[in-house]
Length: 427
Image (tube, rainbow, N blue to C red):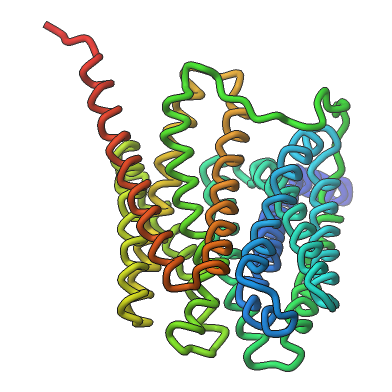
């Protein structure tokens, strides 16, 4: 009897342990996938923002004009938008792993092209490849974070997507500037180190579980953004504000680093790239605290802050000061964060209430307008700088930006007042 029960105990104990271990192992695996995806998003965005700190070196190397510089920056969006709209439905059909591998491939391609570029045209090709990579990763990365968040916490997954994107966008200019400033081969080594940093992310994506079946071919391989009529007023007020905010951020990523070197006499690439990093850090910080503010207030304060930041750029143009520029950068970053958070909340709520079946298309249109806002002002800045010089161009851009922000802020407040007046009163 003793020997029989001794033989049974291990069996029972093992079975119980196994039953309790399977969920634990699964949770640990899911957690590793979640953290690995966070790492992937950070590294991909870091790589896409390395050129921000290197534009002055590229101009010295290839001798192109400010207009060409801003076109090199903006062509990134030409790759990003079609990629975002194409890879979104594709990731639903073929799984996140396939699209994330495509994102890594295009990111590596962009790094190789930029590292070995021997003429200006290769910079355009490299930036397009980077845009495709970020678009593909944006399409599949957020969905993958939700699927692999251990507790299926949608709020935590969304916050992770926001933080990793902003962190990568912030680290890119600092990383590129630091490597180019203090290490040899300034236009090659940043991309080599980036490619090495991508290897762990590649391994992580290869270890992601394959689609479990049930995927069907997408009915539409390219989503055309669409905004239903009932929410168009809210959509345009929100998305145009975000476009202006992204336009201001685009100036800090395309023009301001070179402006710092020319206007303030700063020849340190880390400092030049630091403005682009600081604006994104302040943006994500503002987004984290934006939940405490009402939607309209958040949106109005955000666009007002962006307008104030544009006026600040005008002041810095007449009174050059690195400290003052840092203050202006913080204001623009906070304005961008508040504007983006408030606009996302307003558009999301309007779509959920009035057009629940069109939320995906509405958000695609929202991001499309935002990314266009990122590119167009930078191109206009390049044209103005090339034709009129940096000083006059900054004056014009600052005044136009401030006026547009003021108009949108007033329209937002008046729309809110009109909506309240239209509500039925209770007796």
